[in-house]
Length: 444
Image 1 (tube, rainbow, N blue to C red):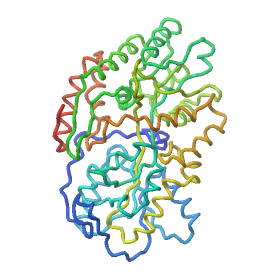
Image 2 (image 1 turned 180 degrees about the vertical axis):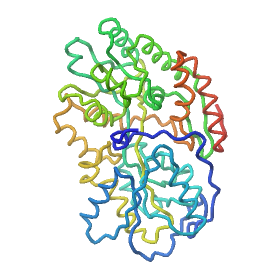
Image 3 (image 1 turned 45 degrees about the vertical axis):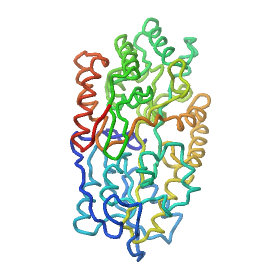
Image 4 (image 1 turned 60 degrees about the horizontal axis):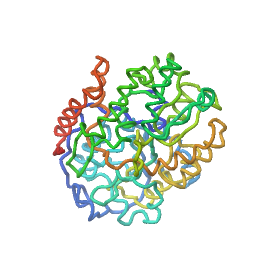
């Protein structure tokens, strides 16, 4: 895992089978377990705020302290649950047993913390009087869905990772190609590139987050979380098979790479041969600017292709992070002030944060900064802003990891030369097995 990837809000690979369901506890002052709709704060005695962040979010705390010199902050840096460490869950379990030690505010690189934190009585409800409804309405549509359980909001989304189509505008002009608007046009262009410019790429299928780019965008129902512990899994529907078949075609003609965008192999052999690259909003900075060092004046962004005739455009999502407010905080006012500032302040989210902010006002500032950088060709604001509201809601955030399942099940099959279409039943079974292992009831 590269540092730049983690800074950009890239998802992390979670360890298979690592997340055990925490037993609901009677949390002091919270009403116990997941019953936080009747949230009762602990006695508000004030005192310093304990804030847990990863190293990437440390500048946020430092800027807040600079702008709020009277604030008393006890800052603890941890891994942000990166690489599926489950550190936060493990520590909360310990704090629940010892009845002390909980932080006031926590940042996590994961979008699925509510899958255990609500049941553990750790995270406080935010839309029950803690944060005004008018403020909460300023997040991008659907952005806080991973934070919502039975209508109650238990965290705030820090950044989005909506997918778009990144492409080399200079090569498109040079070769007189048109940016594809549909997946059919995308595949056809890939077939032209294979014949006319062999060695150049229109995408990559070599990362564990490949399904989040393509299959999520294609409305493949592999991960439909329908309740706190229920999930629907169907990887062999037409929505899944037609996208898998598209990827198989482009892998076969070698216009779709099978190595990770973060691998030295990709950097060395493919970094200067990218015509198109569907991927999340953080690809612009993390991949093209930082990793591949693509010169300015080449890279542009377009809307994610859609299937011909599609009337409800959809995109995938690859990452993002969340902020949680502890139900055990004895200084909720200060904690909520910090939480609101860190997720909405243009000074941080718009100017310092590396990823596309989930808050629409901060996103406006962030986009203005990107546009003014002079790096990109044409308008990047329109496609990114539009995609932020098009993330398909049918792909959920369960306690099990789709990325880890894909890496353990599909990637080895690909390496052995099997097609993605042929591997879809194996993927289905693997998702089912791991969902059940973490306590989910699985349906189709």
